[in-house]
Length: 191
Length: 191
Figure 1 (cartoon, each protein chain N blue to C red):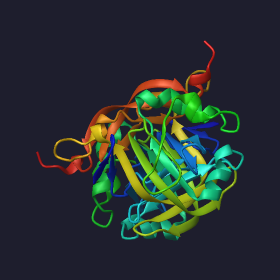
Figure 2 (figure 1 turned 90 degrees about the vertical axis):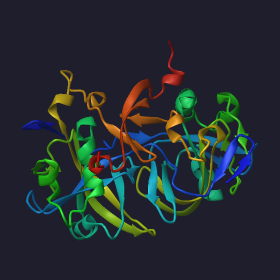
Figure 3 (figure 1 turned 180 degrees about the vertical axis):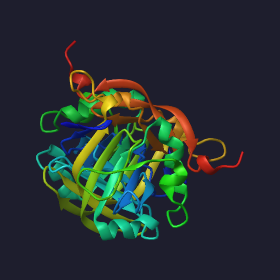
């Protein structure tokens, strides 16, 4: 570590923050399934809608996702923060995570892997490609269905995701979203 | 859109939120450079440290990054929110973005593309692979250097990223981080 004016130069590492933090479900049915918490995830393409998750090959969910080529990204809200953390710390090889975390597996629309009923948004994904990178393999996937909590749809049929109390992850800590600073384009909006 | 108990099924789309929102710099020097704001970004591997950005081929920065195989991810804090938005709305083909946004290009440690001096964290990246997906191409990159604002290093030489006031992006809106809910592992921590 050396000083360079007001900047400190670090060893190269992962410092991209904040990130999403989501519970990914996998498996073949509501009784044969697992949950893995993932922060290495993001949208990679708008059209077709695609996202990725990066998973260590040693994780219990890795083989399940690799075999079934499907998973569901379940967004985490403030009420689910402790369960989200727990599903990231414990292994599905030792625990029935749905049971232990008090979460309900429900049928998805398009994939066999179940959704988490308590999650405000469920993003069903079909794996298109797996890219080994080192510690993690990246699963590139297409979004095939999205379900949201009906309470988040207002009278004008607009999705009010701002009412979902989503959480994010930054440098090892979970946070709620805070103050809304502006909408996309606010810096050029005429007043 | 049809109702399924308490869930509403949407057309498949990108609903992974919140996401990071960062200013990516590219170019060959502090005078020949551009800024593009990106939310489709994330960490894809821990070892080696790797991340990605997805960019539409029509964007001004696309050819620059493709040619130079380098970019810098500059994290956005609350003070930089308006500039971050502006660099996402305007094109480098029409504006000198550093000049117009009042941002300072500074020399990076390992790449030719400049860092944004005002950003609290600068992540220098070298492109390893470009994957065309549809509307966007994904640039997979290795992190080669990280610089942080010296004010974020405390007396114990610990990085206090919680003091950086980073912002995130969710469903078209910029947010500060809010309440800290717990540290990784808090759900199993003995009291």
